[in-house]
Image (cartoon, rainbow, N blue to C red; front, side):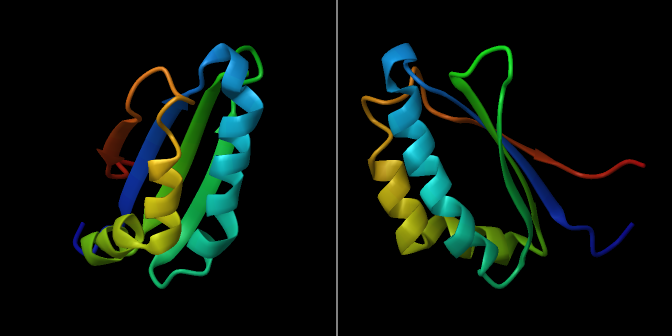
Length: 99
């Protein structure tokens, strides 16, 4: 398959006493990111059994579109706010669709 999109799954774990603060930071990413050129899908999930567990499910048209997102002011601002809210650095995986 040529011309495959880039799929990202990014898991972020909040400190137990910082769930609402982290959620607010992450929610601020949604609308500006969805307006970016190359953004196909950008969804934020929260684990029903563990509210500290957040996951972004993303799809991008290209590596260039993803890089532009990672360099964007809104993403950089959110990333700068993570310290003190999360247990560890986000766990980010790149995937391609098999079926």
